[in-house]
Amino acid sequence: MVISFLSIKTLKVEQQNKIVSILDKFNDIRIIMTGITDLEDLDNNDVMHYKRINVKSSLEDKNYEVFGSIISKDNSKLNNIYVNFGLRDFNGFYAIIKKFEETSIDITKCYVSWMIVGRPSQLSVFSPNNREFQVNYFKKSIRLKPDKLNYYVETSFPLSEGYTIIAHAYHSSTNYEPNNVIMLIKWSHNFINFQITNSPQLNLYDDFLTETEEVINIDLNICILFTDYKSLRFDINKKEKECFLIGHILNKDNYDESFGKTN
Image (cartoon, rainbow, N blue to C red; front, side):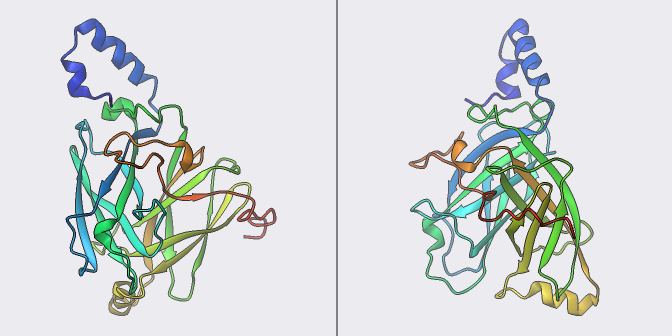
């Protein structure tokens, strides 16, 4: 069961103090909660969807981030359906889902696998199944240009094979909803090369550039797990799926020792 502030308040003072003491030891960014949510109630004919996802244990703060992926009924990650997350509150958040191109995939037979990251001591909730995993979360401002696809991010710590990288895009200065596909191309000791493209079906990005005639600034919210996704487990809405499909795993195939030295 997920530790929550509300359940703590029902305990005796001595027990409350012991649990709070445990939470205080985890003041760093950690995995707060993981889950999988079906999309059975969506209309497969629509291009864009807003799916409300409620958490079972209310959070004590809205200062958290959500990362995730769309996965199929056979438990494979789908790269041609975009998902981002917003409108966060104490009881949950929204998954913003968009189809990028003509596809035969039935969205109602898919799932959103998601992960909340934050500080357990601040949110008073802590994932019971993933407490031992280290998490590093940071933001990187990127200036998107129409003629540029590859963008480089330097980390303040060394990367290693087996880590998992997850990134979502946000616009900090406008109300424009990004529809960017972010793919890991390669990595080195402390550099990541992302390819950032926009939906060919929803030309919001091109229209926005035409109207403003300016380069768009976005924030990349980047989460790095010091493990691969197969090590993670769902806390809620488990259904028949056992592991948490999300992000890109650093491996030998996408490693480039020379990458970063000249960028």
